[in-house]
Length: 101
Image 1 (cartoon, one colour):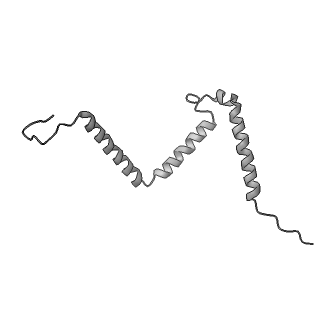
Image 2 (spheres, one colour):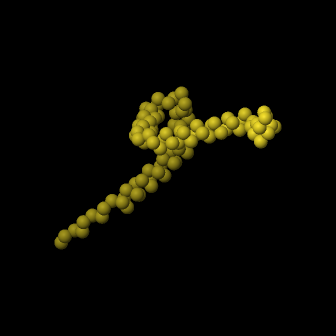
Image 3 (cartoon, one colour):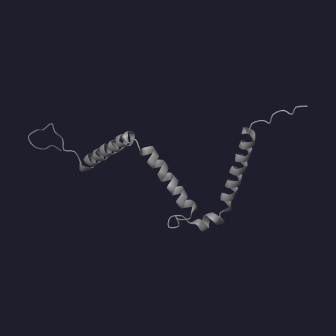
């Protein structure tokens, strides 16, 4: 489709214009994130608060804690991780000093 006196100017669909506007907004957000000196500290604090809420059971509106407690497959995962952590700690520990005779 063409419009007005300028036959070379094409009418673009609204969807294209909206997509380009969203892409521009996304670029601005990325630029803002890169220039925000407190971003990493705020993100770390957010993660800490969310973990604490989860561990205190304060996410009951979004998390089914009873189902998690009843799911024995999660226990298996935990056991494997605990065993791996113990093995890693054993092999990462410094060797004892040789005994003197």
